[in-house]
Each structure stands twice: as C-alpha cells, then as structure tokens.
Image 1 (tube, protein in one colour):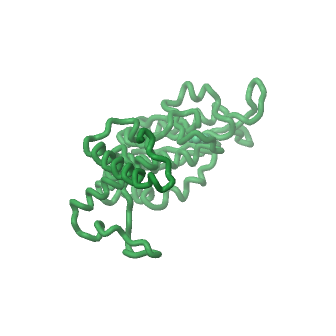
Image 2 (cartoon, helix red, strand yellow; image 1 turned 90 degrees about the vertical axis):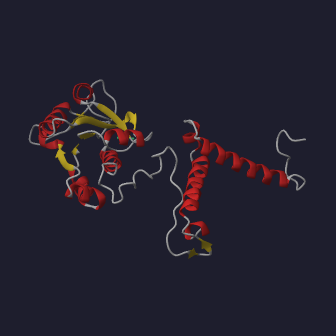
Image 3 (tube, helix red, strand yellow; image 1 turned 135 degrees about the horizontal axis):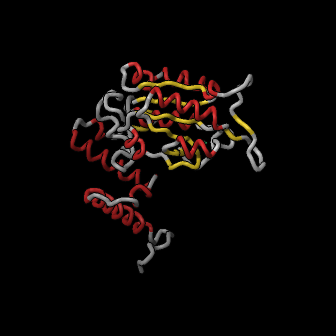
Length: 262
Ligand code: ADE
C-alpha cells in the first residue's frame, strides 16, 4: 500500500512516519510513505499556495496550480493510487471505509488548508472526499494521519497477532469487550474472577456479554442499525429481565411503579 501525503506542512509527518506501528509497517515493506510539499509546485519567488476567493469574502483558497502539480507528481510515482481530499464536506470515514481502503493499492491524500481548495482541483483530480467527523479542523493533516493509521493496521501482517484487528471494536459491529491486566487488585477493585479462572469457554461468554452490553449502553445506534444475532437477542432479553426485577423490587420503596404495571 502506497501513501503519498500532499501538504504545505511536511514536517508534521516526519515523526508520524517514523514511530510505532506505522514506522514498523514501513520498515517491513507493508506500506510505503512519502510526503510531498505542495509549496514545491508553487510559482514565483514566494511560492504562494493560497489566494483570495473570487467573489469576495473572508479566508483564503488554495491555488489550483501547486495542488495540480503535486497531485500529478504523486500520480507519476504511484499510478494506481486513488486521490483523496480531506475535507469536512467529505463522506464520513468509519471502520467500513477503512476496511475497503485497506484492499486498495494506495492513496494520495491531499491536505487542504484555509477555506478549502479551488473547485477545479476537486473536479478534475479528486476521486473521493473524506471527512473524519462533523467538526472543522485547521487543515487535513491530522485527518490524513487518522486515515493512514486506521487503514494501515488492517493490512495483513501489520499488527502482531493476525487476529488483533478482527477482535477490534466495530469489526463485528459491536464495541470490544472490557480489558484488564495486572495487578489483579487495583485500588480496591478486583479483576472479574472469570478472567482468572482459565476457563476459556466462560471467558469467551463473559467477553461476548460485556461487548454486547457496553455497545447497548454506549452506542445503542450500532445495535439499532443492524439485525441482531439470536445470541445477542437472548442476552439482551436476559438483561431486560434483570433490569425489570430491580425496578419491581423498588416499587413500594417510594419509586414510581414500572409503567404499564398496576
Ligand atoms: N479538514 C478540516 N476539517 C476536516 C475534517 N473534519 N475531516 C477531514 N478533513 C478536514
């Protein structure tokens, strides 16, 4: 997988390419990474990359010629790469997109700055527009790093255990189960006994349960958006029964009776 990042701030990526799993993925040849300075394709003594918007208004717009030059250069080096413009107007990036991207040959990630890029660049050179969320950053650089990280860790061989990405939150449309490590007791809170039991069947059951329940509590939208498995439905029903029992036990203690009960 080839990543080319086009930016006016290439130094932001120097450490990013060197450290941690990204650094190792480059070392092992799982990905290649380059940063192209858009300014190198700007004209004139000052190599200006932005200009005032036609029609007036505040802010500046990224000029088309330096961007087009940088994209052409990146395409020459990686002809099979798709060009992505990072912008808050793009398609929201999520795990599904990351999985689809991980199957591709490579990406040219164009980091916009200022108010945006000249529309003609978008129309003629960009294959996808991607947003990392409904908020506005000062540029696409951090967004590009997020895309690179999310995609790289899904490339086979990049993560240590081959199945670590498969167990991720979102990978099965559920959040990941709770995690504990040593020490077994921390500030009067103990690790759940089942995790110390060595009983793999029970541990798997517990993990599945924490995964479903925490998805229900933290991100119910993830459950509402898809068909539940029979096992998930059973588990949620059991939780319903437990919750109802607790509520019933409260009636007569000053709490309102459960709605629908007499
Ligand atoms: N550039 C500025 N804001 C952005 C966002 N939310 N996503 C991607 N690129 C951006």
